[in-house]
Amino acid sequence: MPLLPEMTDVWQQTLNWRPSVQQQAQLQRLYELILEGNQKLNLTRITDPQEFWEKHLWDSLRGVAPLLRDGVMGGDREEFSPAFIDIGTGAGFPGIPVAIALPNCSITLLDSTRKKIAFIEKILPFLELTNVKLLTGRVEEIGQQPHHRENYDVATIRAVATASVCAEYALPLLKQDGLAIIYRGNWTGDENKALENAVKQLGGVIESIEKFTTPLSHSIRHCLYLRKVAATPAKFPRPVGVPTQKPL
Ligand code: SAM
Image 1 (cartoon, rainbow, N blue to C red):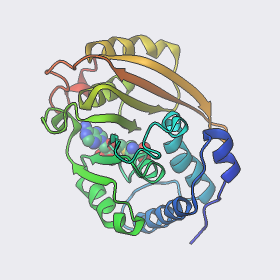
Image 2 (image 1 turned 180 degrees about the vertical axis):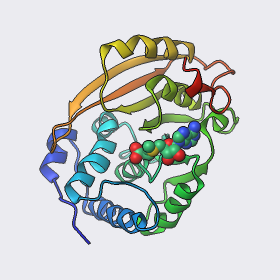
Image 3 (image 1 turned 135 degrees about the horizontal axis):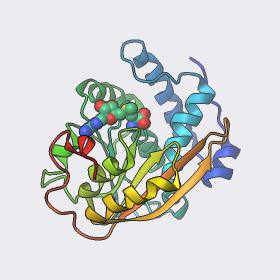
């Protein structure tokens, strides 16, 4: 099995965080399990160790960097266990690296494809992660279920839909003051207006937009941070398929 690069200095310099020995072993194990799984399921086309490190591991954790840095997500405060949901997690990104990096947080991985959730269920024991829950379903339906709606502190969402659609998926699931993190490649100022309009209807505000380059291939990325400031009207998320067909 190929070995992931350790990149301790890069982690430290870019995210002000570095994996412990145990976390490094978990990241390596995750890489191996995805490579194995890829032989049967089409999980990812990114298999080269450096590329996997950058596009799946580093990128996943870059989105939650503000939470890693501030130590707000647990650290020594064992009684505080923030609830995350990763919407459209696929093979577990960004949710599994986040679960490895933030062991005090509880992470729900949601995807509509049963096969992907079944794959994650199979690999979890090998990753020795006890802070992960799995959920199969469409987020439009999950967001209307009382035990999921307004139940999460943080929602992450990468490569699932346009930003306005992601906002409609994520904001109903958040508690008041919760944070949605939308992972993007490119982002132009022109897109702000449409997103602002959508977010306002959903009870949120755009808190910040961070632009950065990835450390190895120097590709441009953006993370959009949305804060929930008011209850989301009950009609959102709209029924399955409507958010993508008629974006806000
Ligand atoms: N987030 C992962 C990543 O960045 O590698 C996977 C991205 S993949 C391109 C999009 C995933 O979102 C797919 O696994 C798909 O099944 C899931 N998805 C799309 N629409 C969804 C919905 N409405 N509800 C739940 N999952 C959805």
